[in-house]
Amino acid sequence: MTHPHLPQLRIPATYMRGGTSKGVFFRRQDLPEAAQVPGVARDALLMRVIGSPDPYGKHTDGMGGATSSTSKVVIIAAASVPDHDVDYLYGQVPLDKPFIDWSGNCGNLSSAVGPFAISNGFIDPARVPRDGICTVRIWQANIGKTIIAHVPMREGVVQEIGDFELDGVTFPAAEIQLEFLDPAAEDGEGGGAMFPTGQLQEDLEVPGVGTFRATLINSGVPVVFVEAAALGYEGTELQGALNEDAAALARLEAIRAAGAVRMGLVPDLAAAERRPLTPKVAFVAPARAYVSSSGKPVPAEAINLNVRAISMGKMHHAMMGTASVAIATAATVPGTLVNQAAGGAVGEAVTFGHPSGTLRVGAQASVVDGQWTVTKAIMSRSARVLMEGTVRVPAD
Image (tube, rainbow, N blue to C red; front, side, top):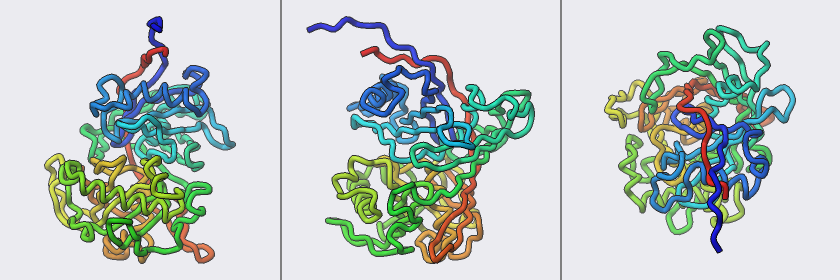
């Protein structure tokens, strides 16, 4: 049976960079009715927008960039909870599998949500200064958390160009400060504790691989931290050292899956495979000089520690924003592997080295009723509209 070849759908969309990521942003009301609610229709549409799944691994027939950092979709809607401006829903689109992972947040794209909300009429104009800072309260709908974005305004529009430099982003832009409030533990996930197992570090048994010292934390995003040395690494590696090494990536995925089970995020290892976005796995090492992927030297004295993270099965080119929250939180808690790699006392801010350079993140953590808790994490990012108009999708 032949199908009539219908004209493509035209859906209003904005292609944005946020931090070291980029994605396709939609207003929920602009999506076809069937795609405005969770389900098969929404996921099929958004996968087609990105061009996934793609057995060629290129995203040639879609808006994706064939990496975890550039294969993302965002849906923005009017706030569903009081005292917030917008709902922000984020989808990570795997390159090679036919589904979208809605289990976590993207900390990098969080920086683009405020500018998008202001430019697309979600904020009361009376609250938007002509010049100065516009504060946008964002409800992160994937994990039920509040993010506050401080967005610079100039002559009545969002200021995008500036002199703030972010390692991993080619050109300077205007600085946007983000506050992740109460970032620990997604509601109902991992028992709701910052350290879901109750341990600051422990022996994690990884079936068929071995046993590793690990810190399992849920702050910003669930993360399994292990020591670089235990994996045979120095912590100064760049993407090429791991991303061409299938055996190394498989071992790190096994560690990630075992951590997912241990944290109570999934019932078994098979379920971890169906949830590739979270938890993350990262390895830490004491500060050591290296040359970043752009060729810029990073001296040991410029950082507290080195961290390398895996996202969607590959080493991230910089650092996921949510994992940065976890790094900063864990670094402030004595006894974690992250704190030990940083040499102990780090205060309320930590600067770590990643493949593209360095990043400074602040966190405020304390003990309440015998449990570690974190009130907020703070970092600076930037965002920019790359293209806006309509994205086209085959009507079938």
